Length: 126
Image 1: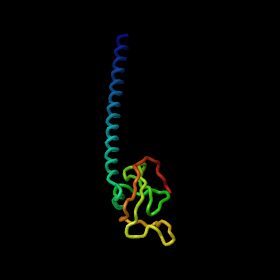
Image 2 (image 1 turned 180 degrees about the vertical axis):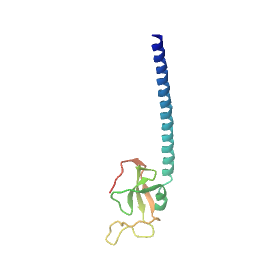
Image 3 (image 1 turned 90 degrees about the vertical axis):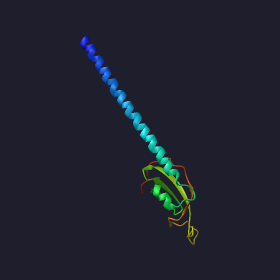
Image 4 (image 1 turned 45 degrees about the vertical axis):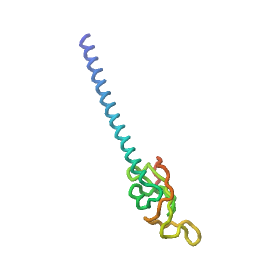
């Protein structure tokens, strides 16, 4: 009986150690994830009104879906589920064609007129 009780206590101690180790790993992983999000938000915040399309493309890349040369959704280069919607001011070219339609033309010199806060959404594929 004592041998069985001793074995049971040893198994409980081993289980407690395993659970404790998993908890520490989960806590460490959570801290790493929080730091990654913080660093990413800090990087995304560098893109603001007045910056150029070229500046934006260092941090974000284009996403599929409907867009024009002056309005488009972009995804964070390090995670395609983090997005921003951007509106540009045309620089060195007309914003509309001769018929008044918004141009599809883009330039790295275009300046950001407005940019949304980053948000989460599934990827859009054309």
